Amino acid sequence: MVYKTSVETQKRKDLKKKHIIDTAISVFAFNGYHKTTVKNVVDEADISVGTFYFYFKNKEELFATLYDEVIDEFYETLCASLSNINNEVDVGFSKAIAFFLKAIQCNKPIVKIMLIEAVGLNSEFEKKRAEVTKKFVNYSAGHFEEMKEKNMINVPDIKISALAFIGTLYNVLMDWLQSEEERDITEYAYPITIFNLQALGITYDDEKVKKSINEMLTNGKVP
Image (cartoon, rainbow, N blue to C red; front, top):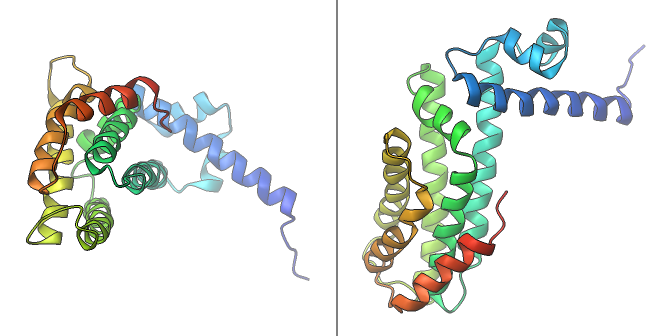
């Protein structure tokens, strides 16, 4: 006889798994990846060791799952920010970058664990990181292609422009994470915006750019 998992039972399992992942985010952010143990997560989540291993084989699998979920959130943030660009390209682009950086700022601890401490974790994880970068670049390229067709940007090569755009965000982010200086990454919103507006051949109003960035950083809601 085949037993089927009821909807309610599956829902409870999903909620339990989400609880473990959400707890792990806090634990990894506080202890760092390498110093975190399964016991740390189990104790903080107030679950049994058996419950943990019902959902995850080990700490590495938990982190990989967590990584996927957090990256998906940031990917959706990037998509949402770029998709809101309208005919006022300079204003929309300014808000898009400010919105993305604000989301990063609000999640600095776990972003640092994911991008700094987990580097070189294993070959599978490095492959995953490369796939994530490709995913971000491909989305940006698709969006830039649409913008070029509408004469919103003026660039000779869409893919190179997308690589440069994501590269700008990534390298500024890495520099910020590794810096000993206490500074919000949102302070980089204006120079990053101006650099990319110029690189993409977008005409802009400097005062509108500053105002748009300030409005997004002050009033914009992030995940």
